[in-house]
Length: 130
Length: 207
Length: 282
Image (cartoon, rainbow over all chains, first blue to last red; front, side, top):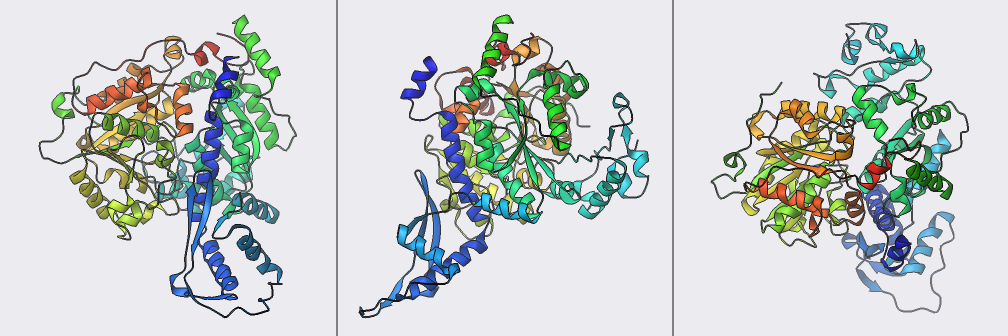
C-alpha cells in the first residue's frame, strides 16, 4: 500500500527514469557511432532544400542535442538566395529513396525527432544475413 | 600445467593444455588463460584457430570474454559463431552492453542476453529495471535471467559450480539456459508475476 | 608479488606540499565492481568539503561516468577532443548540477583506447592539477591500454574490490602492476555484512589479508545505490544515510583527516533477510 502511494505521488519511479535516460543516451551514442549516416543525412537534406532555395554548402551544420525528454536534430543551413516566388512550386520528389527526408522536413521543421531505435533496424538486417 | 598462450605458441598440444573437470566425467574441460602475459601475446587469428580446434573435440566451446572492448575482447570474439551478452539491470552495464552488442552485430554474430543480478523485489517496487525493460532497450533476445542470490557468492568462494548440485535453487536456472542453448524451447521463470511473489512471501513467512 | 604496505598515516594521505592538486586513479582490474560509482561519489563527497574536483572518465569507448553523475545531457565534447586540440579544456569540462566545484571531463564514446597519446594524457592531467584540488580518474576494467592511459597522469591510486574471489585476484594483479609508487588504498565495495556473518561472503579482513593495503573505506551493497544511479543522483549527495556517510568518511580520509576506521553496520537488510527467493532456506 505504501508503495502505491509512493508511486502515485513520485514524479517518476527510479526504473522509469533509468529507462528514459538510457533511451536518450543510447540514441545519442548510436548517432555518434554512425558518422557516415549523418553525412548521408546532410547530403540528402541539402539536396532537398536546394530545390527551393540556394544554400551555402560550406557552412552547413547538423548536430544533435538532448532537450529534456527528446533528442533533437539541429540543422543550421545558411541560405544565400531565394528565387522570386513563382506560380508553380518545384515538384515533390518522386524516387522512393528521396521520400523519407521530404517527410521528415515537413513534420518537424528544423527540430526533427529522430527515428526511435536505430539498433533494432541494424540488428534485424544483420540477423537476416546470418 | 599449460595455458592458452603455450598452445598458441606451439609449445604444447591443445589436449595437453585442457584440464578435465573430473566432477563432470569427461564432459567439461577448461583451457586456462595465461596470467603473466599481455593480451597482445595472442592475435585474433591464433585465438580463432584454438577455438576451431576445440570445436572439433567438443559440442560447445564457451569463451569467457574479458571486460571492455580492447584486444582481449577482439580475441575472444574472433573464432565464435554466436554470442551471449551478460548484463545487469543497471544503467552503466546496459550502456556498455549496447556498445558491445553493436560490435557483435557489425560482425553478424547472433546474440542472446543473460540478465544477471536481478532483484525481483526491487523490480516490483520499480526501483530496478525489469527484464522486459532491459530486453526492449537492447532490442535483444533473452537467454536467461539470474537473480541476485547469495548462493552464487557462496559457491564461487568454495569453487563449486552451482550447476553440479541439483538441490541448489539456481541450478534449475542454469539448466534451463543450457537447454535453451541446445535449442530446446524452455519457458522462462517469471520474476514479475504475482504468483512468483506469492511464493516469495510465502517463503519469507516460512523462513 | 607486491610488497606489503604499511598502515595508513596522515603523512601518506595528506596532499603534497606543492600547491598542486592530487591526481588519483580509481581502478580494479575487474569489471563491474563499482569503479564509476565510487569515482562519482568520492567526487561529490570531496566537493561537499569545499574542494575543487575534476572527474576524468578514461574509459574511452565505454563511457559511463556522465550517466552515473546524471550529466549525460550536458556532455558536448570529450577528452580526445582536448588531447587532439580540437577544443579547449574549458569548453570540454562539464560543471556538475549539484556540486558547483565538481567538473566532469567525459570519455569519447565513438573512439578506441588506442587513440589516446599517453604523453598528452599525462600533460592533460598535469594541467588539470594546476586548476583543481583533486583530479580523479575513472579507469576502465582490465589491464590493457585503457588502464595505462588512466594511470599515466596519476600519482595515487584507489583500488576498488568486491568481496569475491575473482575480484580479489584481479585487484591483486593490478596492485602488482601499480607498485608502491601509487600508494594504493583499498575500498571494499558491495559488502553484505549479514552474509559475512553467516560465513558466506569474504569479510573485509579476509580481503585485506590477501591484498594488504591501507583501508580507505567499506561500502555496503545497498539497493539505494542502484536507485540513485538510475536517477543520475549519486548517493553521496544525500544528507543522511549510512552509505552517504561512508563516502564522506572516505573523502575525509583522502583529505588527510584522521577519521575513525571504516566499518559497515551489520544489519539485516531486506535482501539479506530474504536470503533468496526460491526455497526460503536460511
